[in-house]
Length: 367
Image (cartoon, rainbow, N blue to C red; front, side, top):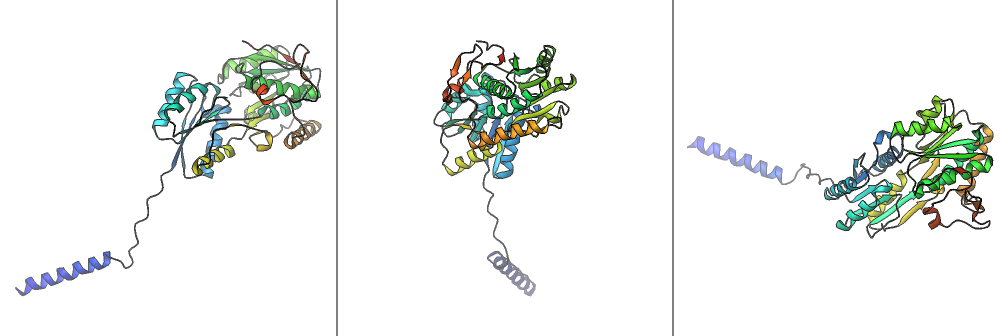
């Protein structure tokens, strides 16, 4: 019996000690659960390794993650424009993404269609013109950067033929060709910009071959509105020069690339997500100038002379200050007709619907 009482007493002491230990003392309270990360998705028309458009957007996404570690991102790459994109955008909305960036012109109608079904999701469409309560558009005035690269091309050409490998005949691409041509002709009025259409965004072989055709036709500088460095590589192989696009393409063709018109999406992505978090985001059509930092030019290649660098840098400073408006009159079309009179400025709506080429362009816009 004594042993029984002894065992019982010990058990009671141990139980009391455990109870006291669990009620306070040095034990730390359980850490609160980490807040759920905000889910954000990106839809790309090409692979992120394209060294061009999709790569530039993905660099912006990485910048967003670096600045906002409480954001979780998803990417879907190489999504064809059309029905496939609508399916992908729907899937991303179903997965709980609060913001979805659709980064190609051909995603415009699919984005609008999906947005109607998911009113609590914010959709941001790059380069389009259709909006809704929960759909905004965004782009930058890359034609300002193209104007500057046009100055570099106009100074570099000896044949006075500058080739331009163009994607699709949409206003965005036409506007870029026109801005570039105005830059070329500002320093070399005798130069022509010869355009070839590929009807592709990402087709390395086809885009490179288009550049070869332009080089064979007498071009000694190649510019592009494409997502691959193929045209720059064609220029290098022929011992000629090139103007890259989207990112600094000098790594892919170091002997050819004079400079590139480049995108810097990161700060804008941070701004959008910050607005959504704070509840201040509203649908808008954002079209940023160079002074926003969204569009710029890459460093010059070693073959660019100092006098050209000065011309470009002086023009850039004027654009950033608002002193140089590249679509200010007088501007003539290919037939020599004045389309923008002296002393006037082309309206944004007209720039966004560009369907004619400026004087100096050798090419047509397919209907």
